[in-house]
Image (tube, rainbow, N blue to C red; front, side, top):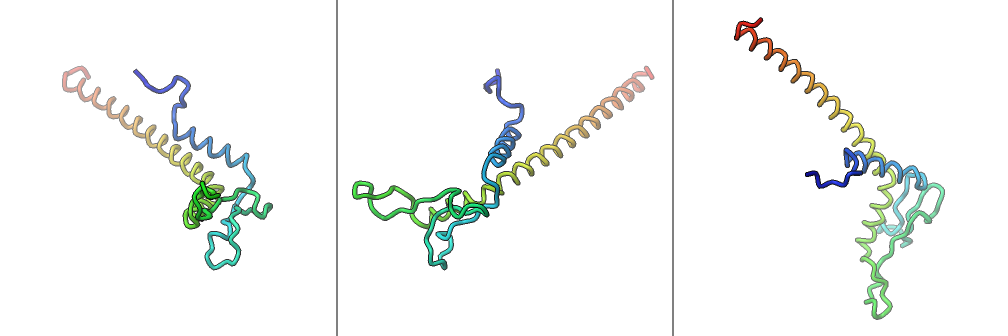
Amino acid sequence: MNSEPQDAPANPALARAEEAERLAKEATPGPWYEPHICDDSHPCNCAGILSEGYASGIASVTVSNGLPVSRGGNDAPPKKEAAANARLIARARTLLPTLAADLRAALGREKQLREAMMEKITGCQYDLKIARAALEGRE
């Protein structure tokens, strides 16, 4: 018995690619850029993700202020981790649609290879049928 829901897509990888493409289409156009917090040599410590049209309004990461929540801490990751989060968010804008396109292309190549293999198998089965008939004297 199949454990997948009945409305599950035939190819989950393709469904994820379609979701990534839909999300990218709806989002602010890219590319997006890392905030200054990612550059240790920059005097500014701003944590807003940038784009060509917005100076920091795409998204922001929060950096720990070093205090426990009970003392007014903000329960955020340390600077190094916050910077990595910012890089991930900024790169995801162009990376996700690119990966989705790469996946679609790979799935297309896989489908072509599968079809070519099935043609070969069908041809071999036909050749075996003829050979078997010849061996049995039923040419």
